View (cartoon, each protein chain N blue to C red):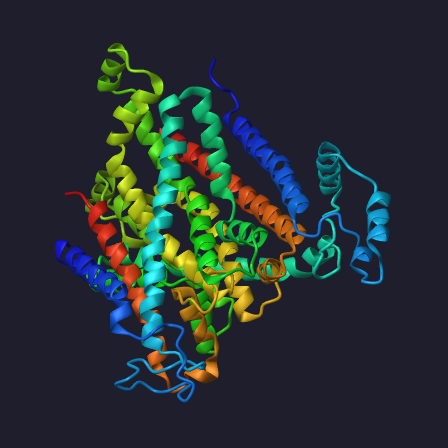
Length: 296
Length: 267
């Protein structure tokens, strides 16, 4: 029997995937927190004045908790929005997230906007002008950027006294340019584009309706992936450019081995990137359907 | 573009040889020339010395050796895992493939650097340099298999449905024997391509970790720790030779991409 609601099915599949990530990620996070150094140890045990018997008595006084109960309580707390307390910063993780998420969100949005604008405009210019000089310059520039680690790019931007947020754009830009250039080139060489060109359809109209529109679903899919690229680059960029965001927080948590904070951050960023990927995938499918219907 | 590939290969071979012969070409990476900290390039120290008086040329050679020899080792480990996971999934097909590939997709959707530093933080940070090298590259190898596994799974799936596998099955070959003797050897070209693709990715990842202080521990140099020196802005003004590791890094990664470009382009 044919699926009458493909979009709904797709939506349910994506929602299920995110839910599985939360549950599996929660369990993995709980495991990591449980095996982290210092888990279940009372700070009073570190008091050098206490004898061995007193420390033993303190340990006996702590309520024991089975593995299953620990996982269950961890997940319940997670679903309630209680993300635990940072061991190194001695503050609730939710509070730290609330404080630092806007900085990262601003950097990521700015980086994505700039990177996409630059990458897509340059790819469009290369396809429209068909200038080998421009193509070669753009390919070499993006090739050079792809050979630089995000951390080094952040250092170079710092040395050049430019704003650190620019780095995210410089990291997103080469991937967007290379992918969209290849996509638009392929789209531009299709027979119906040549026919439209022969019939005298102008440059901008040709690009918008005959080259960009068919490539839009794949470009949307890339948009989801670029969110993940930007978040990944946020760690070195924020750490080195001293931007107080989630990336810097993750770096500090890693250096102080604050696993409860680190795994929560990783999980949240994973869910955000999964949502972005799912959205781009759904939009891409919807656009493909619309394009196919228009063509029919 | 064959000439570009040949230049890339020649450069990589030269750099690899120089690194292997580092013991003869330069003093020890850890030896301190206490009278000459931060010295300019000279006949004795081709790239000068760092703040601790260590010969920078020696550190570049040894650092390149660490990164250039261990990134392929990590790529080998990740390729092995990718064959094991992707190959088995593609060969088994059905619900086994669906479950393994769903898990792979989930793994791929995790932000790579977040995952890397989380697992790195789980392991001891205060370790000997040799242990830190082993941890860094083993981690890269263990966490970098997912993308390759996807490609290998698709290839193994089409191989599992091919005629020669059907014939092998008909002649009585069992599951594992069939996988090991018939499927895996035919996956070799795609595995080699994935192995080659992983090397520059791991070199970049190690550099990122090194600059963040989560990579190879001092005094053992690696590209990450060498590039970290760029952080001291005041120290490098008027010392352009400090950019040599960066230039070498970019050229080596570009050479890997050039070789890949040739592999990707049709014959």
